[in-house]
Amino acid sequence: MSQSLETPLSKVKRGPNRASYDKKQACAIIDAALMCHVGQTKDGQVFVTPTCHWREGDYFYWHAHSKARNVKGPIDDPEKVCINVSLLDGLVMARSAMHHSVNYRSVTLFGVPERVEEQDEKVRQFKLFLDKVSPGRWETLRPVNETEIKATGVVRIKIEEASVKFRAEPPIDAPEDYNWPVWAGVIPLERHWGTPQTDPVQQQIFAPAKPPEAF
Figure 1 (tube, rainbow, N blue to C red):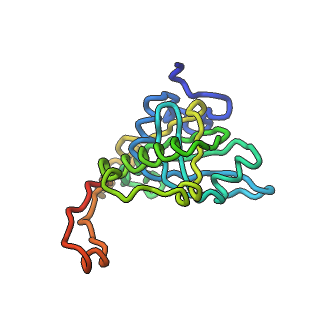
Figure 2: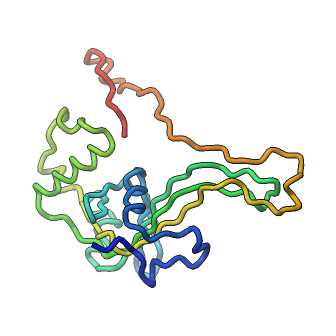
Figure 3: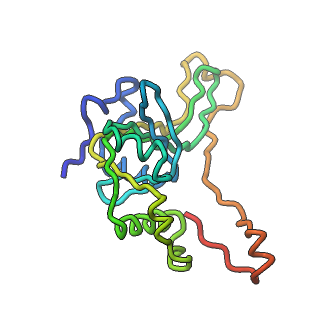
């Protein structure tokens, strides 16, 4: 299996020194993020739809209502979509306004979606997605029913055409600005989960239950 995701379409033109086409690096970013943005066209109009995603092996998955544009459109009229996954890691504070930046990791993928049709496979993918968000929670839930399965569309693209782009460094100022008397550096942005807030209905009906462990 080739580890390079570079193609003429995925090749980064702007800032190629910050680009990578390593598949393992791309998959690590995909797995670390919860949300992606799916870009597609419809009748000449570009649409970008935010949604949650997950990965299994060489495939990138997302779901929506079975009639939603981002899962139905590229199936009814097969077309290559563009998907971006991004993680913001820090604010880069420089000595000049124009040299401020951010540290980040991102993946841009291209591919023609294919629908997951078989019911048991759809349910298995539902579980994989929930396991990413809250491991072990699936087994505690009311089983999904046929209406829910039918109403939910699941599509995937193969991870074979993509680029990674990232920045992970301190400010880069002009040499003449390094003595300017202002603080410069990186303010890390760390993911932090707040205190779980119990559903008010559960508080009324049941004794308090232990909150799940988040992704």
